[in-house]
Length: 186
Ligand code: GRF
Image (cartoon, rainbow, N blue to C red; front, top):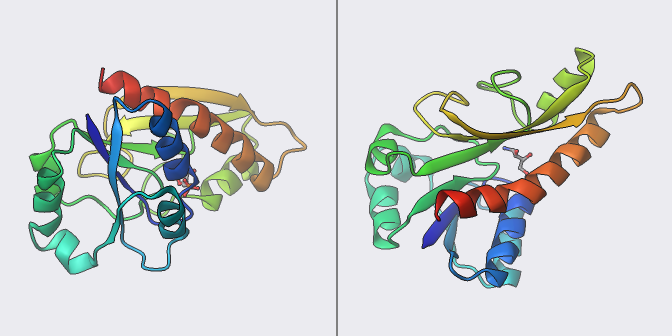
């Protein structure tokens, strides 16, 4: 089975998934796609020897370039790991129930446009939540609204700040995301 990861930023989840499947080669990370030329994920791919490709907004949204590329790799699952553009309809319809995303909170709370990264953890802190977590879900045409596949929780203590919440959430992501991918493809 082959998966393709889409990432816009640091790519620590991408790296964690890549190294996980280097040890479980029944699933292969065929490529990483990014929409940011300067994304740190590109350095990680270089080091890990994973093919990485950049595409711009026009080829992503207004053409079949990315769909054809993904089909050419016989992609069984498209994994969004910190990918910040909305997935266009042509990709969604070409890969029904084959696109998943990870969100760093317990959806439906703290989801939607503009709710990503640090902002999510800041909002969790400001609202005095006592727990947060991760959500892995299918991707549809709305941000963070596809069917939920998996959630895991962690506690938020009064002494936590956005950084320490982020740290806990990342640990949950590293622990569970590769396993959920494995399960979906088994
Ligand atoms: C993760 O927290 C993920 O849940 C969110 O974006 C972050 C990406 O982090 N969608 P990284 O690029 O994998 O380090």
